[in-house]
Image 1 (cartoon, rainbow, N blue to C red):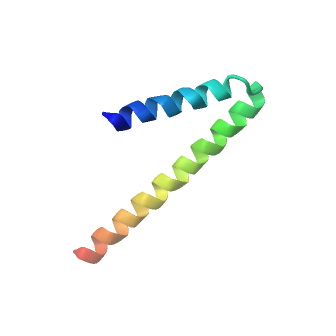
Image 2: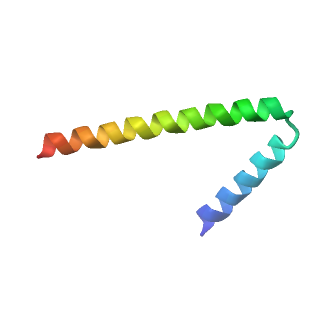
Length: 56
């Protein structure tokens, strides 16, 4: 429960800070975060796929 409260507080701080950024900057930063999450997802899926192959 405490984790949820902290996460919501951090989300509110980030959204509030983003409200003061110009639209192009906010969109670029959003795109950077999206690419970072996509790379992380691909690496994790590849790592899990590789560990399954080794165990079998």
